Length: 407
Image (tube, rainbow, N blue to C red):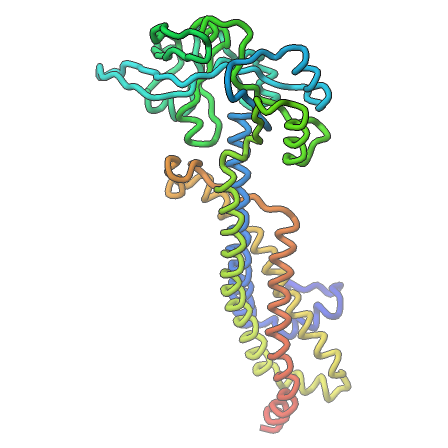
């Protein structure tokens, strides 16, 4: 027996009221319908937030929290710039010398594959890069680390030989020098999580690029880690620009896709509002269950009233039944959300074309506040719509009970 003797009296009363098999099946269907509708809304919100988080994390893996560069020329991190960093509480940064290049590799078929890349010369050690960009780069002399999609399209594996064609860069002061071809060994493959970055970025030791441009200790990009106490990106950018001259430009890494992130936020709000329709439909199913239960149990309700049970107590009984249905739906909705998330992450049907969506997998990312919001709105709909049914039930159950009692 599902209800024990030690159970609270109101549980025993509710069980006596809806404990029949066909009523339990009806109630289960109502609960699953409400749970599924809430789970769909939660999944929609979570997918949009998951897309935003995946995008921001991928951008962080390719550009740190912030990056800055000079508009006009290569520059050196002299003592003045480092002092400015100290004033801004910047402790971790990576010096980068990057250039647009072409990479070529001969496939097994004999065909040569060429792709345009952004070749980055990195000066920091692997642990520092991991701390700032959250990627593992163990750079060695004569080796290159490729983005995942770049390696896939080149059909390149660790140990393969590739050639990088680097054009002369006039800003380095090497006017008139021909393009340079550098032969390198693939030393690793890195995943940023964003398709365009995985397709275009490649990393070498900074000395390799410095040799090509015949420069020393020069940079055209510096990647920064957010100061510990900084939470407002715009405020930090304003402080940075106030200290540095207009020759330098600073960007938060997520600003590169700011339009896409903003579009996802707007779409999340619109879809959440539209999908309230399915919650309302599910609530009407709860409403139908209440009406049906009133018809089936009209005699019992009449007897309760005849034995002195007050109108208020019967109303509380209905409220308890509605609350149990809502709470049960919440538990099932958690299960549905987890199932949706697993399907999105692992089922091959839901693998996205990265060239269109920038990411190849979606995931559901939800905060406790979003759960509370969706569950609260569902409860509000439930109370509003059920109130009309209960008002009708209250007016009719005595008449129905009398008819069934003396039939």
